[in-house]
Length: 285
Image (cartoon, rainbow, N blue to C red; front, side, top):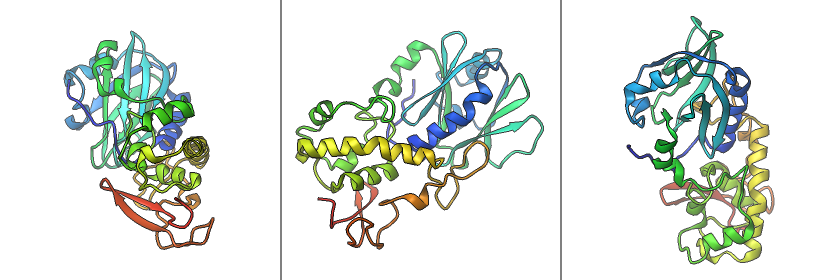
């Protein structure tokens, strides 16, 4: 089976969870009537790309779950429909025969005529349907605990950071440590915890690890309440076509050159491990 990276940019956990919550009432309990894959690249991680439609059609969707940034729908017959939105992907719900958005690459039609459409201009997203054994062999098996649903205790986090020389910002993006945190919300968590993104992970004291852990859930739930963060390109939209409204509520990400709302220092931007980091040198130590 081909492998995929477990670290990726937008959309992040709040955007994927908001998508899941919008899809769930429309799809759970419905049977899949047809599947159309218009770009072969979208099924590049399917063990046998031609088998995806065969595995899905006729099966009922029993649950719509999520782990980190991955949507994971449970299908009849112990199969899992995995979807990842990549950098520019989004799901939309439509009615059979209705107009589609450009770059609609995958269409899953349900038995009531509703279509679940994966729109992805850059095709970094993907879909696949796995057996339990295939799922266990995939990169998904190496994901860390979910940042929203199963955040590890402080002692476990501190143990995981002990001796680590990598910047704490880079470690937060490592999906093997905690699944679901991406660039935007990592900046927000570090700002809230008053920790510099440049600090080596192993240098954090116990109270700093505790402060960082305390920041994770409030930051993620704030993003989720706003429907996620839609950037200027509007690549991410909710399945009903609305944009996420969290961009105006961000405290750190995208605010370099602006005044820190906590201490008044000018916010700065650094590139850490090829990723932009926005932070306040006045109060993040």
